[in-house]
Image (cartoon, rainbow, N blue to C red; front, side):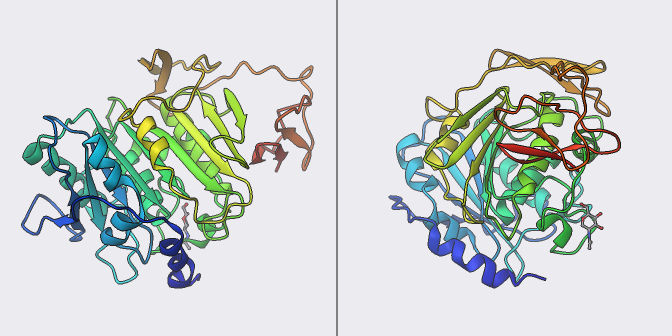
Length: 373
Ligand SMILES: *[C@@H]1O[C@H](CO)[C@@H](O)[C@H](O)[C@H]1NC(C)=O
């Protein structure tokens, strides 16, 4: 068991300070179903327009609403860009969020996720938030919770950005900590992950949030392998190939690699970066469409599905599977050759086989190397 206090204490120190014009507020009365009593804090800048956007920003273990409010730039950027920020506050002494219970991992099933969903509903009905511009982000435990919110409440959010998290349901069935998942030893296929997300809200066929994922290769708290598992999960859920459509070095800064999966999943790997990936608030705002710009992406994917629903996002046609994945990619391999156990099967510049000899599967290690394991 990792000492959460030791591990996460450094996060607070490493995240920069904000200088918002106003202060953090709290909703103390009842605001909807909130079985675990997650704290409801928010920042509402002056002179909001009608129908402002909303960002839910979720803190790390040992953190708090106040710490994430003062340690990130979402609030002072809200002063200029005129949106509301909600900062949920963990009700537990260790200040982690519940990312493991069956309740939190299901739509309207209870748990921390339902408390946060109730905050969003309150913001829409009480403050006039634009229900079509609601976003979620967080660091570490908050990033895991970002994955949970995207899975359990896909109807509420248009986009998400998760800093150093794990896939939705990776902690399922455990207590507050799951070493196998945290250490990057839990691996599933895209369809398996996707089925876990779809099971959270059976019968839901509406749009789901676009997903941006950040992770450091030197993360020893929630290991880097979790990034690829998140990519497998959300590319499956959003119906795009898990093979990047573009790979850009030194984006958005030196030693980061940006991979795009159509226009709906974006991943940033920080080479040598540990668990504390600096929050890139201005990129999040672009990804959320609050400010102009945003990651360039190429939508034309080679993914086809046979039993899905076809939708168009950002001018890109994507197909969302309704049941277990039936994705076929048209990636060409070298004459049908397969790579052996332990052999390389992918990576930037790799021209050899991308399919592994049975029963091995091609597992992503980093942008330059995938291996048959
Ligand atoms: C960790 O989570 C996985 C699901 O990803 C679950 O199968 C496993 O039982 C959990 N481990 C513990 C020790 O609870």
